[in-house]
Amino acid sequence: MVKPFVLIIEDERDIAALFRHVVDMVGYRTEIALSGQVASDRLSNSQPDIVILDLNLPGVSGEELLKKIHNDKRLAQTKTIVVTAHAHIADTLPVEPDLILLKPVSIEQLSIFIRRFGVLEKAQKELNPWDKNTGLYNQSFFMNRLDSSLKQSKENDQYLFAILSFKLSQIYNLKKLLDIKLWESTLGEIVKSLKSTVRPTDTIASIDQDNFYILIENMPNKDTPAMVATRLEEMLDENLGDVGDKGQNPIGITFCDSRYESSDEILRDAKNAQSLIQ
Image 1 (cartoon, rainbow, N blue to C red):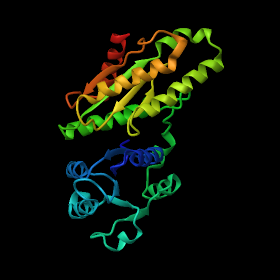
Image 2: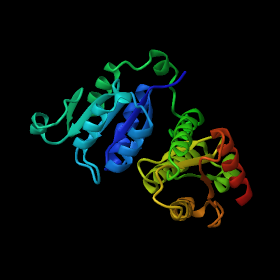
Image 3: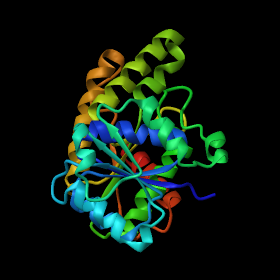
Image 4: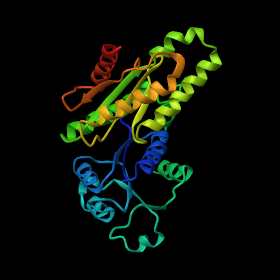
């Protein structure tokens, strides 16, 4: 079953991540465009079912994008949700959107309106994105995001993404010796720090016991994964403290592009990258 597709056009990462979380939970496939120009390119080579559009964007403006959607026959069925902090803007738009939401947009409000556009009931019933042990995303959800990134890279050669991977080897080796509450507390602190170390729009998943994978989308350049990996290694050293020696949790880096045939191949290479650095 192909999930309906929502393109989120918003230049503030925290807000874009919040919107994406809501839409993911409803059952759609999501992509984020952080600038007007990136959004314009995506609209030229894709057909989203819904566009969530911030009007105040760098590069191409939200109003221009609204006109682009309206004038493109391919996008005749695309629903548009304009998000703005200015109530008076509704009377000045060149094209009337399907819906206007005023910032700050609540999770409940956005969820209600997204559902009204007809998400497939089956997609909602099958959606279970969480890993029960860590509260991070599970493998199924991670693979959906990875599929989306691979698809986007095949449509746009400039699109860069990568996977960072690591295993909590120090704690894993001592897990049997630790009190279960201490183990859960330590793991919880690491997960909390992990979320604060990466960008809000990066996807963190726990796959197999104590293995972590981070999908970095929309990379500005090829140096980004190494920079993020360094921050992660420093975070792990700090959080693991007395559990073991520093530097025992290196980060595997897998650069991805359109040459991959499937997301399964990418995950295989990410696992190999992890095993090679252990």
